[in-house]
Image (cartoon, rainbow over all chains, first blue to last red; front, side, top):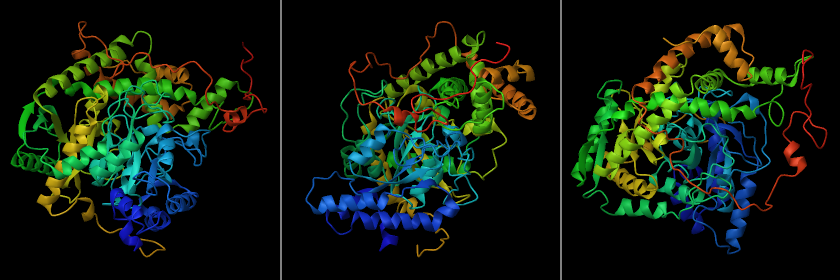
Length: 509
Length: 99
């Protein structure tokens, strides 16, 4: 029974919960059992909630009493550790915040609770979301459920691994340069970076404020849409939050799955993101071409579009992000929260410097110092100023692409999951993992990652990225659900179902 | 080539308030030099006629109404502090002897 429950989508669980076929306590217990059985190996979670079963029991009681409940009420969800939670530590994967329990909930967490979802725990991540492999977590890496010797992507490898390993049906992530979409690609799951400002960042521990977005992680497009509908919309506590009303993402996903949304759709293939210059794994390019052929067969019009300035996106990103991070991370000063390393006879500045030396990992130090350099007097115009100009050029490229296409597509990541340790000593090689995902963050447009099959050479998942114009998130869900259906029909089932069984400890799962 | 020297890394670390070890300074000098050379390519297209973009979706008037809202209590605000006296954060000396 419980082994079956963990393989159901959030939408399927919701139907069973509403029909009284299963209780939230049973669903939650099944996922807690799964976490106990596999997370010793996967290490997707930094903290498992002590309150999950009590929360679930309350939802069951309210349902029994006839309360009006939202569609996802009683469904468990995992939460990336970058998001503040009142009842659980929130460390952002850093030693400097070890054990810190915030005095408030992030708005997205408060909205999950109001919609009566059941928080299962906090998921692992690269420290302060700086990384593409979760190897920069201060608490040890997460391992890819498809192959435990490989990375689950990053920074949100914990949330992606949690859904891929059936430890949670859905999760929250955050995406600054690909931290939702790249982990989705390498774990065979779905993830969405909404339009910048579409989802509140209040209570999300900031990395780069002009790039960060919170978004859903799941195994199906509809589940991501259901989560998006719960967390999205205007928040007066976030000055960058867009005040507009939003279409229902779940309606869009359902429309896409059942209709013919692909007929006549102009699908733009971005020349600069298809790996013509090399560096893309053969199986990734092959599956991408097959997906395009399927789309054409379903009536979509495939058009080639060019975004010449995307070539400079990674460079611009690794100036803008460190600059903003160096400023955002100044708050970790040993005074108000987190770690303090005392220095005998030292001043508060000595204590600050010793605390940050001990509390920050290598990648965080690298980026904070790089950002400090990029913002220095005499270098600001050459580096940070130039990067901001590149951002304008990339936005113009998107405008021109979207004049020719309704939606843009590319592989979500250039390769399948690489081995733990493979790129850890080469920061520049690690940065290039995000070549396909970074442009969307720089321009603020929404992006979705969904699985498009397994690479023939290694049997590991390959991701397809969709990008839509700013504020057109619903288009991603409609087209994404249509493509998901198309691929599953062609491949005889979903990618997630092909994940190898994991060894379990102390359980029957 | 970039101008990243060990002395510059040491100075930047001081500005960023991170007490690096000598080994870290040596390693970062090489790594940051390579990264700065790579990211400097932005200068190839950042010509004077291109305006800068700071935020992807510009908004105006993002301020809340100026009225009392939910705020943390003193106790909540101090709960995560390494040291406090019940109403204020407690720190060591602000000024060194030479100041």
